Amino acid sequence: MAGSPVVMRVLASAFAVAERAGGIVRRVLHSGELGIVEKSGASDLQTKADRMVQRSIIASLSRSFPSITIIAEEDLPVEAVEEDLIESGQAEEVLQKACPAEYSTLREEELVVWVDPLDGTKEYTEGLLDHVTVLIGIAYQGKAVAGVINQPFYNYELGAGAALGRTLWGMLGLGGFGFKLQEVPEGRRIVTTTRSHSNKLVTECVQAMEPHEVIRVGGAGNKIIQLVEGKASAYVFASPGCKKWDTCAPEAILHAVGGRLTDILGCPYRYEADVQHMNSRGVLATLRDHDYYTQHVPPSVRQALSTN
Image (cartoon, rainbow, N blue to C red):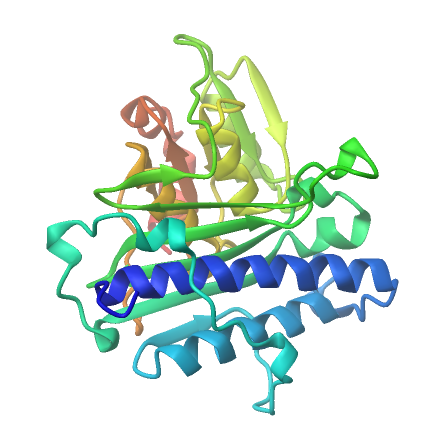
């Protein structure tokens, strides 16, 4: 809708673009030609899907909104993008929502979009497809205000005939959509954390939370889905490594349903265009009881990360 506020149109486009991106991710996998390259080691990979999706997202959003700032994970050369990668549609389910008053007059040039074209690349190459997401987050004045998470392989374990993929989205003042919000039962602590980037600090911090269960999965987007669907009560990652494009979209969706995402010390992250990309003090995300988790961060972890 041409008359919709800019932020709603950007969000509606991000939804449509993320759905196209999910299709690209599936298509590359089915082709059997992943085009894997190592960026900084065996745990930091890039595939053909990462490259194609990033080009698709940037070209699509830039064509519709030339004044927005887009920051994406992959360092790719500038080149022409094939028309079949361009998505010009907008999701009606987003446009039909009333824009929260505080965001109704935002201008394109005030928005910063953070893009992770394929969150969980290592898991993608290993066939752990339910870990994989596409992340598009929208920030205003340094705050994550809206986000889209596409799960390209949602339902893949159901086999042939199952409808693949889904898109979750949320906005501050509107709520979260595309999923059923659930919480872990009161009094039970289930911590989700990294499966491929663990170290002594991460392990020490997770154990200090006194969890009844620990779930190790890939992808920041996937971990936030664990929280909002009641599979985990906290996402704990006491280490640098996560970037702003990993957390912007998930943070917006989590905050839209009443949760919190901060650094491991409980301080918020900022998403202005000129901030450092690394979340240098780790990530702590919860749906409730955030203070419990920040208070249980060991002094050794606090000391190690407070210098970052």
